[in-house]
Picture 1 (cartoon, rainbow, N blue to C red):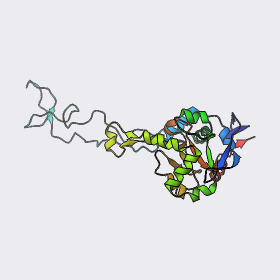
Picture 2 (cartoon, rainbow, N blue to C red):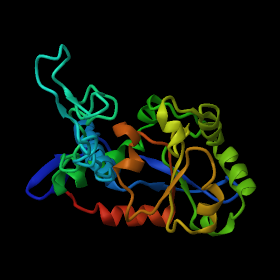
Picture 3 (cartoon, rainbow, N blue to C red):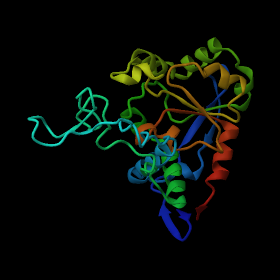
Picture 4 (cartoon, helix red, strand yellow):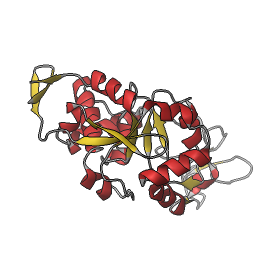
Amino acid sequence: MSWRVGSYMFPLIREPPTVAVFDANGNIIREEKLPRVFGLPVRMDLIRRAFLAEFTARLQPKGRDPLAGKRTTARSFGVGLGIARVPRIPGVGRAAFINSAVGGHLAHPPRVEKRIHESINKKEKYLATASALAATSIKDLVIKRGHVFKAESVPVLIEDDVELKLSRAREARELLSKLGLWDDIERAARRTRIRAGKGKRRGRRYITPRSILFILNSHTSPLAKAVSNFPGVDVAEPSYVNVLQLAPGGVPGRLTVIVASALRILEERFSRVMM
């Protein structure tokens, strides 16, 4: 078996595992084999590149006013006065304009023209997303990433009606406890801490580790709203899930909960698997 992206073939390194499907009470109702995309090799290099490309795409260019620190009448008084030949304000004598003076211009300020967006080819990004998705089914990678859970297999699959039945955070917590995933939410809550530096007064006071990723049919469904306030939880739709969510920080192996019908959408999205 292999995976075709354009004219390139990538071998499937393993047979996709078979995982249990749970109902709203946390009971196993059947087993389902994961799509072949979950058998892809985990390309750490591509995942890292795709993460940097998607992360830097969200950064807003910033720069200084070109005339900042330069709106002054300061000029050099010349030589022979026994003072440094720096620009000074007439009648006051205080140094200005230069970067070593109070209120002077910055030596090498940030510029709006600076290229901060890392680029990546479409096929590489496509394969990186598929590879990051495959990493969610490798238990060792999920544990290595720091997640704490008691589930027998990953990702955890839930039945379609669970997304519509559970509408309260208490009900979602009970389900996650039965699935053996609530420990990871508690880990994220324990490790939430105040950021060091100036960022704490710029709208990003706290740092919260990433915990569970829910891939649901809609980010406005009852279950999505029920889990949205849990520490470190993200909700994504199968058609738009990306490397930022599957491999935060460029590290693959995120603990993931997928609804059964969303799994079929993922299979269709990454359907370029060849025999």
